[in-house]
Image (cartoon, helix red, strand yellow):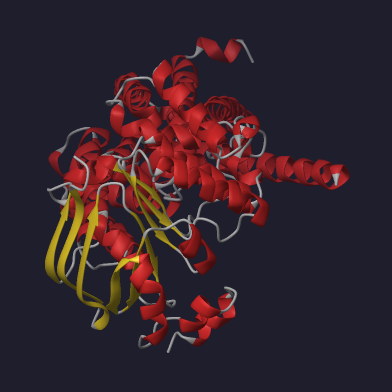
Length: 271
Length: 253
């Protein structure tokens, strides 16, 4: 295990796994608690438009995906809160329009689109150092925002109406939360890909939720779960030559099933 | 300050997508009033509270709360909704729920102060739930949860307390204590109570508003009690017989 760390790509992959775990541990806890899993799915698919734009303009697709996913987060939030369009319809529209734009941009860009598969399904072993730096910056933004807004986000997730009555700017706060989701999706894209992002935003937090009823502990536990399982998934994909995104997601699902089984076994024993 | 006007509703009309709920409502609530809004289900009681809070905008008419708009006045209002739906697995403790009442007093990025904590503990003590402060809210019984949400409304240190069926799920023993508590609180704040429990109205409340889409009576209890029984579609049985939710249901239509 140690000698594979001599390879630069392996060290990068390990960094990426840790950064991914931090982002999805923190943001995933709120995604699960506020029940915005499918909004997050919509934002991540819409981000594909940004990836396509990167190919077209010949810049790093991760960079162009940032404004794209932020805008789609805001669009979903505003469409569903300010207009009569229902939230799931807004998600559906953004989801497909983003994907369609991505496909259009890629077809317009000259030549073959290399690595496209990696953006869709993730490839942790090919994350370059430049992307690691972007991921690190986004992680810092996520951590600072959540530290500043912790009590407001906690209240918003629990009871939005009451938070609004006591003077919390809930609409703005909700949009900020969606933007945090958008940023965490960018952090995750390289590792698990647009299509599998939603697994890392939901499964670690859902696993952690089985073991604690304190939000701070839940966030920390889901961060640890995400980091550990991403690293193990990375190792499995290296050893057995599996696609990393799929390996990580399936590992998460297996661990979730085991934890849920253990929890059920013990709670039924107590009763 | 005594007798200054806290809430003024002028010619309020409200409809949920063409279903009229309130028509031509005029209500004035003065400082230290203890007003009970009574009326059948679907009569618009909750809608009035939500208009006072600025959660709903009336289609017609004017609303003044503390002489200003409901949205600006909200921070002085403590509110207990009739139903609070949340995930019983939600990771939040009783004291964290009650601390939510202090959110508006602390800016972004600032921690709750000692004062916030002591205000919340005092509110929990008032509803007799202080020993549950570290429990998960989802693990409490429905009645206990309702008491915690009453404490949360009190932790905002409101000047106006809006309670929407506050005793619908607490036991009768605690109901008595609760009304005594409201009686004490009424010295410091104005209280609006939506209820079906007419025995409460006769004992504790000093003003009533009888509401079924239109306002059938609004004024002091003394004149109101015998007037209501003569009046239109108001839940008349509730006045003369023991309160029961069935009799309310019969008056719906």
